Length: 398
Ligand SMILES: [Zn+2]
Ligand SMILES: [Zn+2]
Image (cartoon, rainbow, N blue to C red; front, side, top):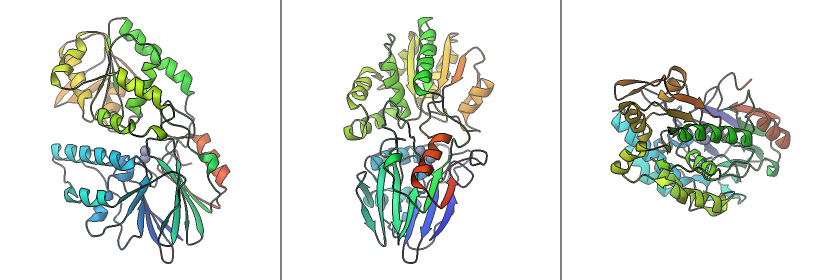
């Protein structure tokens, strides 16, 4: 068996792993790395593919898939829930690329790609040429899977992104159900550290939010559209907040998809109630009123590279609001506007450099990835003779 990393070796972004045996060629994920001035694609994949295994919808795993349909038509096997999310994320990606006048590589291949998606339930074996595969719940986002495969007799596990402890929305990754394997390809996003205790973190987070609104202020919570925004809504819902909480941006479309899959949600009723409880911003008119009173706003983009979150920042600045907080709920990648706001307390919105030195700015580590101990747990369970680390910075892969 030959394994080639086409991206995400010593980096996070543009995952793509080609696995070749004598008569079988399978590609695991094919994503983009989102960075300015333009996204970075994985190395090209030449020749015929028997199939593609897509671990989950995030663009760093799915964003380059349409390129494969320029000249071929491979089947894409992925867990249930993923296809709709891929559609939402890719369309948004194309919209932003067009706005930034970046070259778009594959505008016309989306429909063709969609026709070739095959969604598979967890634990159900699927045969692809000389190989067979089974997905296990990865606990990362809706429809994320850890893949176990046998390719011409060799046993392989491809972790994709996974979280082995439970969150509000997801059950923990099914690490304990995984069979043993010869080769394990594992993500190492947080390979060099451990996450804070979730309950403690939630209490700290809610305490900070309450402090601001009880003082008459406004809190902006930039959140990733897939999973994080909905999770933050559920956390606030379960903590008796008595000022209005708003949900804005692409996280609304994603919330609708989440509500379609009760069997994939840890506590569906709680999520359902939380998403009915938050106020969905429908239009510009509603958006304009949000900052007129103490409020909490959950909005995309999670790293502030677009979306209504920027509107709220601009508006906070124009209204000269003094009691404002911006609490990040996801990791801010280097070079993003979010990282700059977090570190320098300034942000560039449409060419205006806004100063937020008066604001309460903080990062809460609500990660959807496993940490160091999660990686050890997976390796201990699967006992591989070969381990390939990917999806991590060089420091994290040590
Ligand atoms: Zn992911
Ligand atoms: Zn990823």
